[in-house]
Amino acid sequence: MKAFIAAAAIVAVHAAALAVLPASGMALSYTFFFSVAALAMFSAWRAWMRSGTPRDHRWWLLLASLGLWTIGMSLSARQNYVLDNSNPAPGDSMFFYILYVLPVLVAVSSAPVAARKKWAMAIDLVLAGLLGVLFYIRTFSIVTLEGAIGPQQAVDVAYMLDFENVCLAVAALLRFVATDRADDHAFFRAVMAFFVVYAISGYSYNHYVALNGHPDFGTSSWDALLDLPFLALFIVTMTRQPQRHWHPPVYLIRFVQSASPTFLAMSVLGFGLMVIPVYPSLGIGGAIAAVIGIGLRGTLAQVDLVEEEFRLSRSRDELQGLVFTDSLTGLANRRALDERLLREWHRPAQREPIALLMVDVDFFKEYNDRYGHLAGDDCLRALASVLSGRGLRAGDFIARFGGEEFAVIAPGTRLADAVALAEDLRAQVEAQGIVHPLSPFGVLTITIGVATLLANANGGPLDLLNAADRALYRAKNAGRNRIGAQGDARLEPSRAS
Image 1 (cartoon, rainbow, N blue to C red):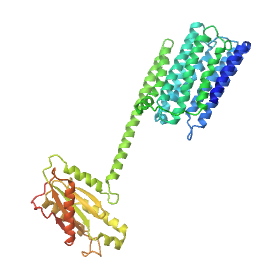
Image 2: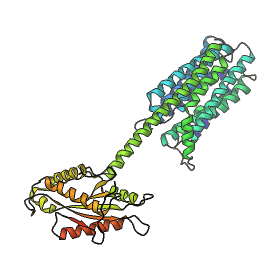
Image 3: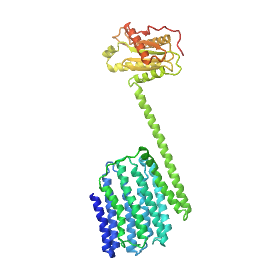
Image 4: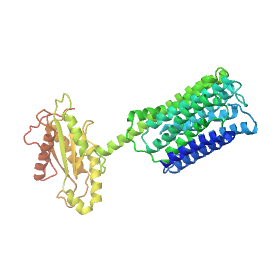
């Protein structure tokens, strides 16, 4: 509220001073214009200081724009006081009044992610440099260094100023509306306030004051109109940011952010078309550069997107591997076993039984007690290597079930062949000769429970797990280092291949 009152007071004093002291009106107007510009630059610098860590360096682009405008005003004062030139549109000041939008245009055209890419910065700088050249050509194709030759040229300059002010006001308004971050909201709120007010007050002043019988500063209290955009910037940067009651849809935010790089390219295209009548080669070159620039930027952004998708896909695969892999043995874990068993159970046109082998390491607690848990871990890794190394088909699946237990899924396998597979695995482990003094067998051995079931709608994978677990329990009670099979199933002669 204090900032608003101070701004209103400045406008009122400016208008009153022009009315009371018309003879000194021009000097008063210049004094106020430089003062409000300095006030706006101070408020932008203060906003940068308060933008957090790391600080938002886009505020420096706004400061650069305000500085270029101030240079234009200084050149205008030089024309009036040093060169005694009362022309309403001297070429040097007009050029800076057009050029001043360039730094902010770069900020408004920057997308959040692409702005951190060196290739995006390079493209923006090339387009910004080309746009500066087009500004220069367009300005001095209408006016000379001394100013407009006639009223029509002055009007043309005014319309050119209106065009860039309105375009930047619309672009800033879109960026302000479609923001999802506090720093973006604060910056584009300030830029939008400045350029929307500037577009309105600049149009009103240029067409209804400067070009309508009042060609010089200080001849009318309406000169105070040009204070308004700088004071609007001062107000929004010096007051607390209001609470947002409307949050834009995510799609709108992403759409505006993705389209923002076109603001700079479209400006190059527009001014390129403007200078074609005077400099056809340069104008056509500018238009082509705008098309190539936005096309190249879109292509490189797409390349970055594909690369990012590939990286995320690889990271997802790695994470999925961690989720489904036992960290100790490198085999699949219990979760992977459950999913694989469920998938095999519901496989279409399943006509052969599914075999499940439950493997338990005999007297493993005693092994840990004798050699320690680290040696026990080494033992489990060695067993995992033996169990997965030989005897399994490509379609068979082995996993660590938990603790010292392993499981093997053998799709399309009848009970007789599942028992033969289990015996082969048991014999291979015993043949390793891993010393186990606390085992009655003298070496490390395993006991395996075997079960097979034909997938059907009346049962589920849990039935197969329970059957294999019961077979393992019976084998362990019978003395260990042996195979236990379903007691109610008949051994069949062949194993499906």
